[in-house]
Amino acid sequence: MHNLYSTVFEFASELASVRVLEKNMLWLCLLSVALMCIRRWRQPAELVTTVAVQKNLPRLPMLSHIPQVLFLLTLLTINVWLAKPVIPLINETRTLDTRDLFIAIDKSGSMDTILKDAQGNDEDAQGNAYPRRIDAAARAAEFFVSRRKGDRVGLAVFDDNTYLHWPMTDELSIILKKTALIPRHTNGGTNIEGNNGPIQAVIDHWKEYGKAKTKVLILVSDGDAPMSEQRIRELTEGMNALGGKLYMLGVGEAWSNPDNPDNAEQAEKLKPLKTLVANLGGKTYAVADEQQMLAAVADIDKLEKSSVKVETNETFRDMSIYFAFASCLLFSLFIVSVAFTRERT
Image 1 (cartoon, helix red, strand yellow):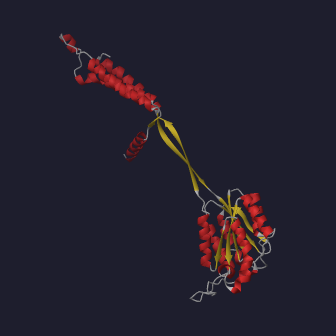
Image 2 (cartoon, rainbow, N blue to C red):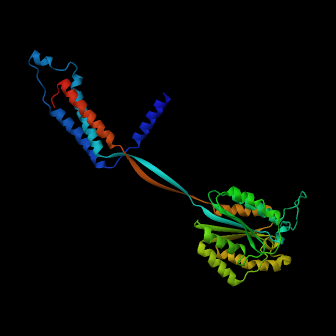
Image 3 (tube, helix red, strand yellow):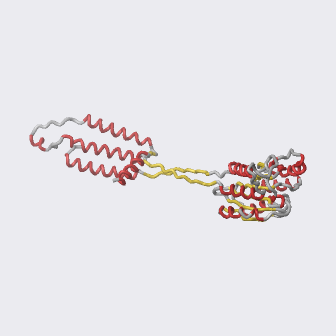
């Protein structure tokens, strides 16, 4: 019984959504009704003069109306058939706007330093030591990757050279495993501007394997590395040619507290890198502790959120064939009813 109700409900829902493509043909329905009314009004009354004629009249007067009703229904179904009834079908296609994301984390010796808060403390109020810069960077990368959906993500670390931890992939579980390995080793200096630096390495990787229209590089470093104006122009042109964008997470006191005289010299070295980020339409985040680093990657996640594009197109299921069958059936019943009731047409 439940299945019957469901079937009836679905059929009623479909009927309620029927649309006609030739609406002007529906005026014929009104014309058909009007002609039948006029015919009925102008039909002369029959006078029964003999018993023999009276025997041939139908015993139930209402039966004499059946042929006219069936003929009218036949005309109406033909008219609806000609109006081309259809049921609209909405076909929806969802496309995920994916991105090519790359995370490059500085693993130079300076990243082995303990993070300090804005007051210069290296432990919290409970006496718990703050994590190393490299530990905080690895956890931030893990946090960011875990929030992505449908994007391809690559991972690299760098010191004097750049080391590809994993190429871009949509198997983000692999990237998450690789982020846990980042804090194991820290050594060397910081090389950002060189041909073997992280930005150039990512540009080369995108040229060969990049697929998405949107490309984003997230660079995590204390940024203690020089950059010439010529190299800034070259990297800017290389990134712009691929549609790349750069976000910088600057770790350490030189980023978070550049006005401190003790940090003045190092803060001056960071200006070229900030200029490069600005040229590429990105954003620089100064992070002094792990919470600020997590907040920064959460903000990048919002700015570069993958969107779902929904495309719809409308098709139709032709229903006119049903009305064609109905008109044939009704006309057949009309012929039978005329013979049965002896109705004059």
